[in-house]
Length: 484
Image (cartoon, rainbow, N blue to C red; front, side):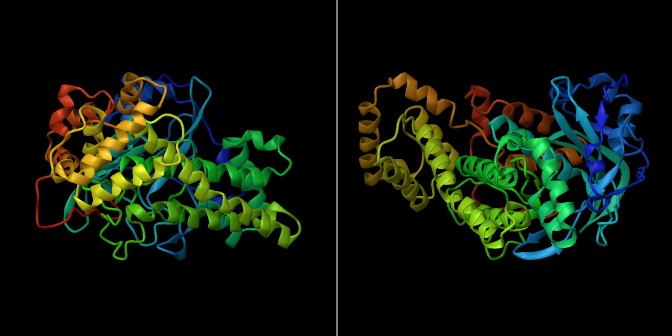
């Protein structure tokens, strides 16, 4: 093991060669460290000081291969806005898998590290603002308790990249349980042999679902477990008001972690039709559509596994259909449990669904802030805006209070449940943009303060109050962009 703490293995390299391309690095001119996630570095087994040294920064910039590393780009495919395409890591390099002090296996990937055979005409580079944006949002998601890839570091490259304007280049070091995607399986199914598909499935099982080896049908077990994890994940997105923005099948992981923070954003005013991505003109990936799209993506995953589920085609198809049919129930159960927690409700009462949907309907009608409505209910039940003055809300609140009184748990228990389920802060879009604008100009203090506030969203501290407000009214809706 190096003095920096690199402890890499390269199990993905042992998959058939069609799944990846080994690469040489694409060095940059003058790398400089912008931000390092010290807490994550320690968890991964790195020496924080060594990572910040000249040698450490060379690795984080993609100028030097760390001890034990074997750089590669992964091949995959995927449905993008419903259309199937051949894809792959077009601007990312997997250095290897860090074996942590606790024995976990974690991918270390450089994003913005230059062209690969899958770049499809792109330059393979990234701009500083978008890489810092992924750092902020992914770490906020982690603090909210939502499974996610994480960000270890961002370095500038000393090079300019051309987008709509000239921007400073940067490389993000991303960590993940793995970068296996639904699109990886689609690639194997469409372009590989059945032996390739089986090798990939066995690898996914070994890495993420070892209990499958004790199951009667390990590939059906894999399908069912991925469905379970994705149902739980998307429920957490909905409960937090998170909109992914580009739920293509190549952006759905087998591990159940959120990946790709390009056009994502958090909802301010509650509206199921909310879309932030500039290219999602039809609203395919709107907030209210996310559970349905997740089910559609998982159906594509099930299709890719059909040759492995059973030797008889009809039986295989039936097994896949039965597994996929469970997703809506699994998602709704997870979402309903989370919503009960947001309202301090213990147990299950049949009328809870109507109570929850009634509140959401009023929030939509009165254009209430999603996060702050639940934050207000957590404490005194009063808030700003016309929702809280509406007669129908007053009547709803009486029904809610009666439900709270009917349960055995105390008022304090309910309050604690709500405190732990309703964040005081989320990465508000205007706050994120404010931090990025300052950072690109060389002032990191705005981002540092924002990251500190977002690191403990359930703390409900006085310091967080300044970050809890929504944006000022404006004529144009907030927009995000793919590649950002």
